[in-house]
Image (cartoon, rainbow, N blue to C red):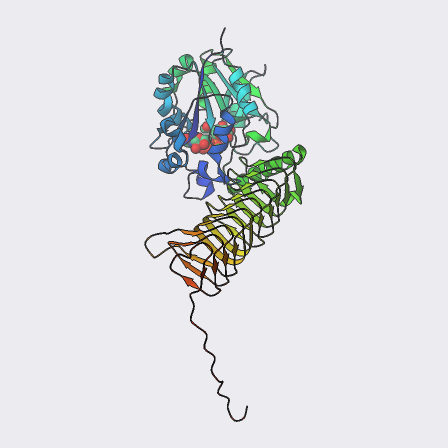
Length: 458
Ligand code: UD1
Ligand code: CA
C-alpha cells in the first residue's frame, strides 16, 4: 500500500505581540534568515507541498518568499490557530491530500526528523501531534491524559484548571499536528472561542476528536529543545544562539579550522569546506561559500561572498556579494560591495572600496581607492587615492583599465573612460579622455617654481 498523501499548512498569520515589533513574527531573523525560512527548509525533504497562512504583515511575508507565491492563504483577521486552519481548509481539500500536517510557523528549530516522525504516523490515526516535556512548560498547551495514559485533550496554560483537568503532567503540545482530512473536517465547525483568549484554538480539535471516538496519538519527543516555539525576544535569542553553536561545532567536526569558535557566527545556508580557516570574531551570512584553503581573518562581516582556495581576507573587512579569487588578498579594512570580483592573485588593501568592479589577475589596488563600475585587466597597478568617478548625478558610467596599466596616485578617472593596455597615468591627474595603449596621460596643473618671498626677520 502506498503512503497516504500529506499536505502541509504553516500557521504564520499571528502578530507576535510579545515581540514588540512592527515586523511579523515569522520574519524575525535567526542568523540573518527569517524564522519561516527554517520551517520551509526542514519541511523540504519531508513534503513537497505547503500552504502558508499569512495575515499580520501578509505582503511583507509574501514578498520575503517570492518562490512560494502560489502557496499563501490570507487570514484577514487573526481569530486564533483554529480559525487559521479553517481559512486554509478549502485549499487543503483542493490539494486532494488525505492528511494535513499543521505546523506553527514560530517553531524555526524544528528538524526534518521530527516532521518525518509525524508524517510517518499517517494512515494509523485521525489526529496526531508532537509532545515535549521541557523543564519549563511556560505558556505551552498542556497535554491531558486519563488514568490509562490515553490523551483526552490539550488545554492552554491560561485555561488550565487543576480541579477540572487534574495535576499537570509536564507534557506539553509542540504545535505540530497531523490530521486526517475526511474525519477531522466535521470538527472544524465545532470549534468555539469561549476561552481565556477569546480565540478559536486548533488544539480543541484534540478533545473533540477524542469525544467522537476518533483515534488520537501523541508522539512523545522528550525534552527536544528544537520544538520550542518562539514568542519573545529572549526565546528568539536563545534559539539563535543554540542554532549558531550547532552550525559552528558541526563545521569543526567536518574539518573546518575555526579559531575562537564561540565568537564565530555562520548562517544556515553558508557552505564552508573542510580545510577552510576562519578566525573569530566574524559573521558570515547568506549564500556564502568558503572553499578549502581560504582564510578569513577576524572582525570580518560577510554576506553572499565566495572565497576561492588560498585567498586571504585580513581583519576588519566588510564584504557583500563579492567573489574573491584563488590566492587573492583583501584588507585589512577593505569594503567589497555587490559585484566586486578579484581574479587570481589580485590584491585589495586598506580603505579600498569596490562595487561592480573586476580586478584582473595579479592586479593591485593597495590603498585608499574607489573602484565602481570598473573593469581592470591583469597585472595593473592602481595607485593610492585613485577614484573612479562613475556617477554624474543621474547616470552611472564605466571605467576600463587595460592589462599592465599603471595609475598614479591621487587620480580621478571620469567615466566613461578607458586607460589602455600598458598605459600610464601621472599622479594627481583628472582623466576625462581615453589614454591609448602604451600611452601616458597626464592631466594636472603644470608646476611653476618662483622665488619665495621671505619676511625680513626670516
Ligand atoms: C500554540 C498552541 C499551544 C502550543 C504552542 C507551541 C494554540 C491555541 N496553542 O500556542 O498549545 O503549546 O503553540 O508552540 O494553538 N497564528 C495564526 N493565526 C492566528 C493565531 C496564530 O496563523 O489567528 C499562528 C502564529 O503566527 C504562530 C502560530 O499560529 O506561528 C502559533 O500561534 P501562537 O499565538 O504563537 O500560539 P501559542 O500561544 O504559542
Ligand atoms: Ca507560539
